[in-house]
Image (cartoon, rainbow, N blue to C red):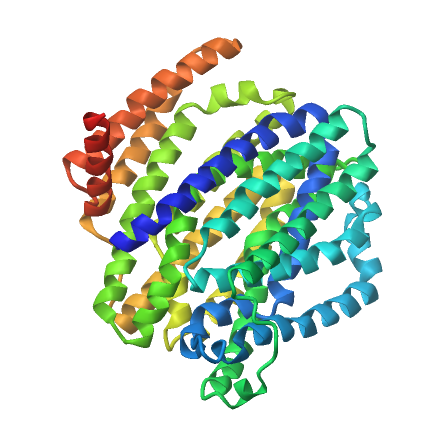
Length: 505
């Protein structure tokens, strides 16, 4: 696990730089210079193509994560594996083009009443889906080579800088909104070109086919795997991306009100999802280690990764949750037109709790994916997608964006319970340790004391002062608690190392 911590540090730093830029963009720049409808449109032009990209790539990223170690061979350039995972998803994209054209009127009819502005730019979904699909595939290929920092920089930092520049140009009235939408979409194409060039520069862009790959002993297993993983990917799309799409289609009552609700929900979702930043980096670097462990049938290592991932993720997430929720009212003072976006306050709460539940159950999806029981992922994800659609359809018309957040929280809790129970029954593994009660206890403490630690006022200077004081006290207490009771040996070791460096200086 120490290797996971060390290799995650750089990516975590990059992610937090990206969060800083994203926070500036989402909480100030967008609400300042864009109407809620325009913010909602740009959000959907990210969410809808990323949804389609998950399906169109036909499980290619999962194939890379699970099977690359069996093809790895520098002399043969990995038996043409890279060309293979670039080529066959193109079949999915061609199918998507046909379906998009054939059902175009149907898709437009879903949004023409409450999100009409989206229909005007619907055609941009096609190139955006292509850009996102291949960026994800190349990123997964870099990941199995343990080269995640540069791709993280591109997606977490550089892409957001491009967004900042685009909105800034628009803010100075140098371009109109129509050109902004084109620029915004083009940013994803730039990211794909750069990441592909980087792959070429480091000697991993093996684009020439090697037809002998079809005779490889693992090809039949890959074909069988794809039969299950592709439907599972479709279920995952619905489960994790349906909230904004359903909000745009069925929430509100006025013209483009669906887009306004998407804007409020998206900003709230962004704040709540900050909680899971450590999970992304720790889980990402754990994937090739987990794949190798299953290849060697090393159950003790798998158990170690499972439990240490869980406590590290939970501690990190609980700290971030505490700092966000204890300062939640003051954070809204930094958002222009805050009276509009305050409606998302409890969306933040439920999204943050959703992420904490996900982090508590650690890398359960990845464990099932790499095990002989990978078929269960399809069953569980299809179940999750069904529950998500039903609960969202019921709760959004009643509770609006809060209903969407509650639906997501409920389904993720059920989803993770089912997966964790399955792993325990089939492999005798679980992510839980006694140390987990402490971070969850602290989260409960924060929920109870937050109403009593708010001070009236609308001064930004006062808000900054209050946020600083609360963060130092609450964060300091939590970190002291973590170290005092050694809840995670890896985190304690990291804290000791950092403290010793500070003392030496």
